Image 1 (tube, rainbow, N blue to C red):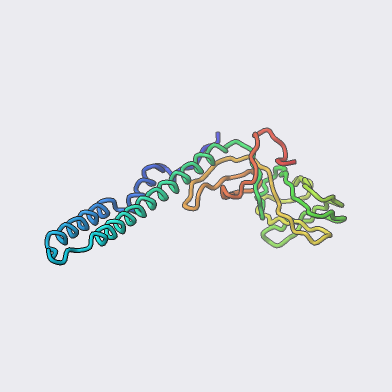
Image 2 (image 1 turned 90 degrees about the vertical axis):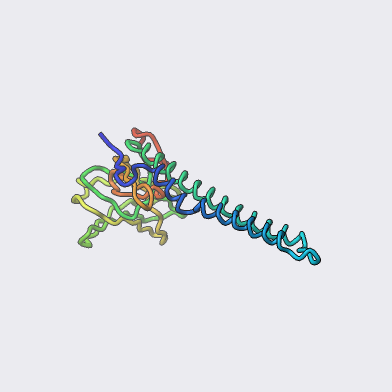
Length: 226
């Protein structure tokens, strides 16, 4: 049974509220407003009757105070929005457990299971290959042959290509000199909450930041975007 690892993200609402309180100290803002009003009243009370202070000066001072309060309110609203967005992103990521996603990758975490993916060629290539390099620098070349412009699907079968379990960097080599982005489809096994945002554990890929997700699909879907 897959679970969401939220050891670092429990009590999101509470932590978000604390962040907002720290960002803007409401009691300090209220105290500043009270001090301003007290000073303005004292200024009116002790002004020289023969040379009264211009009323426009009071208006300017009050306008400046209003602008300060407006900026404080905007800062509070912005902080609220950031916390809400972070919570929504975490909930969305948690809902992906057991689902199929397509992610942009530069490396793969192979464990004997077949991995499906694709890349997009801008121009046709008469010779195209998928390159996998393990941690020791050993490179495995999977020939894909001539390909037309557009999306090119591929399948990596570790048993067929003699690939041991482990981490591999992955890239595309084409005759036309393109270096397209590699996309891999895999099922999300769990989601971990980190300071940088949700991190998904994707089958065949490993840990993937939430923002690297390109497409979503049902768990029984094949290659995404094909």
